[in-house]
Length: 319
Image (cartoon, rainbow, N blue to C red; front, top):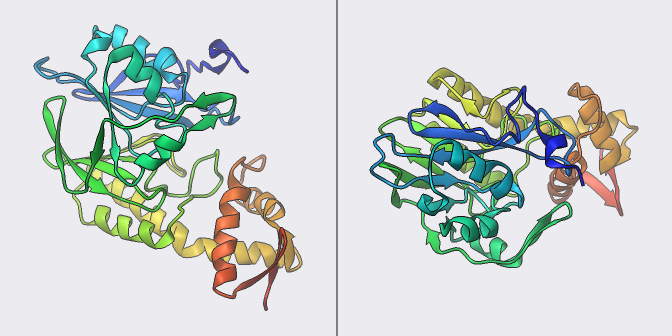
């Protein structure tokens, strides 16, 4: 496994353990996705919420990968003069390995509670892994519901249920500041790790986009830099609107892109072969590591609609 030093990227401030204040009381901590994913330009952003007045205890949005407690969270707390025991809660936007992967370590190191939406809680209880780093089964301390208002680090955040990427994906909305923590729920064109945007539930994803379109958002805090955006913090409001529009455009058009790639391959190809074509068409120097897996979901949906035929691992056009 690569060492922490090898994963450290000073230029992008990834895996340095330095917190950067992007808005008053909101600090970004960037963790590398290496060595599992070889995409330095893509990281996971953890968001530390601290009351500027110092009257209320800090909270963090997502815990990162298993090592993140030691590599980025505890160093950031030390930088800000926050005792680990002061960290009250980690709110998981969803249960995936790069967002809830350090829950156990963080709870042991700080005594904080783990909160997650009720529909993603079963994923924590199943456990998972980030490469060679195990994520042992564990339970949340609180199950969140849509429509709740949470008091976090001196501000009120509304819990917005935005499924699609996962059943229990949530956003946290500060209505007064017009600020929204989105996790992985809305993905524009996807990251350089994925190659394309991914959602388990396409219809749920569209409904979640409708919810965000109806909100006034001037600061959207995503968990990764989703292409064509190069930062996790999307602002001002005009850029947020462009981000949401790009997220919708992608899913409106990706089926057509997949079918075009299948026709260009002679009407018959595997998901891996189509991933090569799509990544090359999108300008990636190499095939992204998750593209083929995401494509299988898209192609399976097209097969259910009768638009492609399947033969084992091979997909074929019907026209």
